[in-house]
Every structure is written in C-alpha cells, then in structure tokens.
Length: 317
Image (cartoon, rainbow, N blue to C red):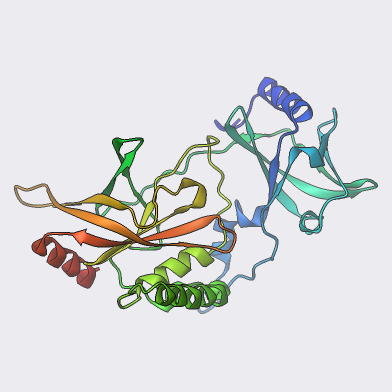
C-alpha cells in the first residue's frame, strides 16, 4: 500500500461520509493528470521533434452534492447529468473531493446506466499530495500591506514558466490560448486608454494575458481552504505585476503597498542584495470567468541605484 492510500477502515468512513453529507466532487479526465508525464515522453517523432498533443476538449466539471446519489455498494449515480458531464461518458476520470478538509481522489470510469451515468468507487482512494517545489528561487519578494489597521506581510510565490525578469514575448502564449489572449490584450489596452492610464511599453501585458488565458489548473489542494499568496509575474524598473486567484486577491485598485525584493549573492561577504519599493495599484485585470486576476503596480518610490539594478536584471534574464 502506498503512503497516500487510505486504509480499509478509512475508506469505509469516507464512503459513509459520501452517502450522508451531499459532498460536492470534481471530475477531471484522467489523461489530463496522471497520464501527462507518460504522454509527454511519447509525443516525439522519429526526428526527435516534439509533436503537439491534441486537447480532448473535456474540461474539469464541479458537481454539487445534491446532483449525486451514493449507494451502499459504493456506486455514485448521476441522474439527468448536464451536457458538460455527459462528455465524460466512457472516459477514465479522476474524482476529487474533500473529507474533513483533507483532499482525496480516486480513479474510475464513467459508465452509462438506465438512470443516467454512474461512477464505481474503487478499492483504492488516495490523499492528494502536496506539490513539492524543487525550483531554486532567484529572489524572494515580501509584500507589506495593512490589514484591519495592522501591518501584515506575505511572502510571494512564482510561476514556473514565467521568469519575472525575462522580457515577455508573444510566443510564450500557447497556440490554443492565443485568440483569447489577443481579445484580453485589446480589451485591456482600450480600458487603460479610456481611463487615461499609461501602459508604458505594454510588454508586461503579454504576461498578464498569458496567465489569464490559460485554463484553470486542475491540481487540487491537499488541504481545503488553504490560501495562497500572490505570485510575482513580471518585474522591471518601473512596475511589478502579481497574479492570483480572484478569491485570494489582497490588493485594492489605487491603494499603496510596499515590496522588499531580496536577491541572494553566492560569493562575497554580503549574502544578499535588497531592493525596497513603494508601489501603487494601477490596474486589476480579470479573466472572463472572474476566477483569476493580475494586479499591475507602478513604483512610487525607489532608489535610483535600485532602479538601475532591476533594469540590469531584466537585461541579463
């Protein structure tokens, strides 16, 4: 038995919970999760050129508990399922849910029955594991803000495929997302112009629309309700851009904040180079689903030598 598998007694408790508590679940086509690594190795032709994998078009679907009936035999019935769920018929899926805030999942196949669709709960139910980051941070970012008249701080995160100091280019946007990203870009430029706000060279907007156009990630949290800090999406000598989910947004448009950037120095007596910046929120851009947002902040106070340092970082990224 793997460490993340439930024991027999734990599984029985979870089954009873599913039957009694009207638990909402999320369905994800399984080849978008556990098969990704295997598929990635197989998407090369004989010339070792990567071949673009076709998307199946079936996206994660959240089902409220009242749409589910869980039988004693460990079968989940979906009566009169919506079209979004019917698309899973015959497919192997990952079913995710929470038990006492603990993230759990199992793999099963969606089957047709007289009353609609059915999911057989297998013998193995697993705990959602914490994602371990092995990426070495090139710097840390500490955001200072006021909360209920008290000063608070958050250590910000980063997004793997968005190096904050690299100059954004349109090719970063995945081909499948480029139409959506282009629509966002045109809308945000018009929005800034109508508000009388400068967008500078506007390159940071490529990073913004890339993030907003991407499909929501299907990774579930190991613990329900855990809050994530904003991630640093882009930095230059004039602006810093943060990305977050809408529900975890800590910024208010027009409000002032401070950021401490710390860059490790591998050699020499000084261990790190710090840059302290006062910032103001210029714009908060949202995706169409209002589930994700990007916060664009301009610098209101920064030392001249620190601005030059950030500019140099951008040139060498």
